[in-house]
Length: 209
Image (tube, rainbow, N blue to C red; front, side, top):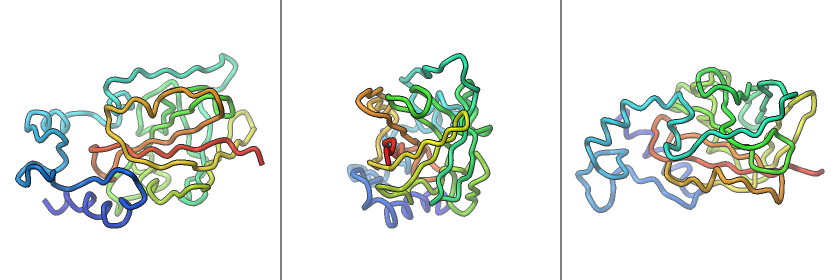
């Protein structure tokens, strides 16, 4: 019980104040409810345990993967986050296996107008390794507004600046919406790290300076 509840409690203590939504270890309306269950339903709990969250398609069950990619582009590109010591991580768009790399779930190629949405796995903080795709986004909650996210594709590096951080649910498909008034990049992982309860959204905008 301690092992399961620790990431939720620690996340609330150290990170929750940064975000609009606070994740609570036990629902307020039912103190005897199971931890991590948004609907307090044992059947759904068992389904959650059986769900394979290494597959990008399970993260937003009502969403459809849709990458608008040009034929002459390579099938991957590189992403770096200097603050988190993530260097040249592979971003794949023809795959959905999050143990092989980060996955672009929807959007155009980086550098274009629209919303490039990238999924990455998280884990319990004490097994974090920025080079392991099963743990690579564990420290994503450490990011702040104006932090850099670098994308290199076809030998061109694009610098995105973090503009918004929030927590939402797997039913919130608005975070996957395409907006064509600017060039956006959105990073998504599960939080608290080591659970699949909520989704952390890190939205950034292409820097022009």
